[in-house]
Length: 390
Image 1 (cartoon, one colour):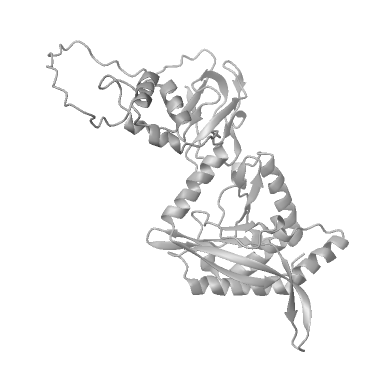
Image 2: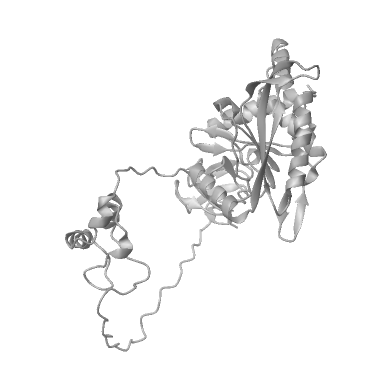
């Protein structure tokens, strides 16, 4: 009995993958649970495991092909088994067709629905910055060709459009950028979001980092922020939640997604159950995840099930920014750089300090301004107290 190898569920919000490589060829023996292929999503590279013992009888999909969950990729069975492939029936041509008289064509340009355009004509139109919807083929119903575009140019209709044309070059979107574009478009168009900002005195946190480094404990400011956010979320569970049709799902653990800039685009690997970890455990996981993200080798489990997102641009000198909510989460925190200031003391003097701006963007279906402001107030206290579970 043969067994199909199908594409498994790919994770939250991932609807397509690329069949990166086959690790076995037809005729090779395979074992249940053995990795026989690799799938690449916009978030990670994941192994495809064999569901049964036997021999790889047939490969149905070649490397480099886009695939979707549930799609059959190959067939496994016993040596000598015949692989039956269903072929869709051909349309019958035995029924004679009655001739249909040609209808008279109306004069002038008419709407034609989806345009048929030759690849060469599309490239030429792109290079010239032309709107193809304004160009008609020489023969009604035919596809637009380069000759049609040349004729269109000679009429002078395109002159006004060409005057303001600017030179450009086209950059193809990689898989990561496609997902970022899709998710951020959904965030901006489907989530009614607002933002609230608050300054926090990060002087003590910066001093703590130096003290830990002097003891040989290497931690980043982002790691310190992760633990501070986890503590603040304990008193504000609705910030660690999501909207779901007619209800709000409040998560019972904090899976902290941390935005990481990589050569292939923005990624947000997840520190699972971050509230249970020590500072050093957070720092180690953060370092490992950041390196894996930049080397494009994150596993699917490392990029899914985030409940809250932290984006720290302070290392780039950014004073403040407003991040977009990372769907389906209810909130995201943006942290700017620390700036040196002079603050008044209770005794009437002044003292140097480092202030950073915290900005939370939130889903208004889940949170109101007061709730976000209260969460920011708690986070401000955590940062200024700088008491960490090392």
